[in-house]
Length: 292
Image 1 (cartoon, rainbow, N blue to C red):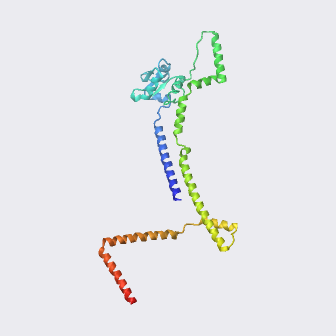
Image 2 (cartoon, rainbow, N blue to C red; image 1 turned 180 degrees about the vertical axis):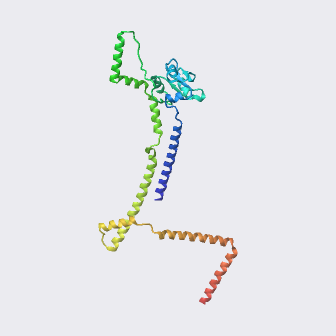
Image 3 (cartoon, rainbow, N blue to C red; image 1 turned 90 degrees about the horizontal axis):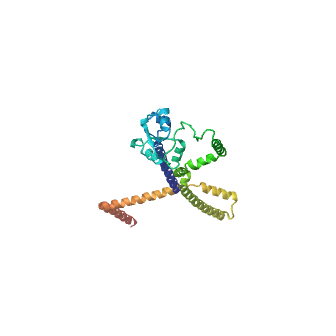
């Protein structure tokens, strides 16, 4: 029983420590999130904003959104996007990059440290320019419509723009989180200990039951009934340890400790030891005189 209790206390201690560490990690990660949640937070802030060189984003941010041109930083490649975002506004970088969604999705497919925040603030579509009355315009529009209807257009988008590399990293991060199966080893050890303790208990119980059945057979001269054996087994299961046995062991231990203390006192006080011996001699002399 004590062994099982100690193992359970050990398991609870580990689970409590793991929960505390996980909660601390979650709270720390939440504090690392950027305060930017959309174009409005960029508009009312003062951090520098990156945009693609030659994109319409510069004029759109200045004329439509109302952001000062001095806050805009031109960037020429995805590598420069990543470098400026990692530096941050305090180290000469940018707080965010505003670009067209296909380019952003292509950038995020290989850069898993960043993410899209907020909603799209413009929905200007893509188009192809052809000469007036060109037969290619009708054919191309028909082909794009067909791709959109049968789902091929979405599959092309998913193939080239979905974050394939980031999905594996997110799965790895998810696997690092603590789940119930993370403590399978602890519960297995605890279960084995409980099983061993119960096995030992039932073995002792069956040995006592056999002894009680043998004693009952010797006293009666015949085997007991099934109900009698069942009552005997239940009484043995309900039997508690005799407290007198524990008291006897405790008194024996106290007596041994007192004898050791007395021996040490006699060793330190030889006069007391001599007086004790003289008293014992007087007792022996008086006893001999009485017998005489």
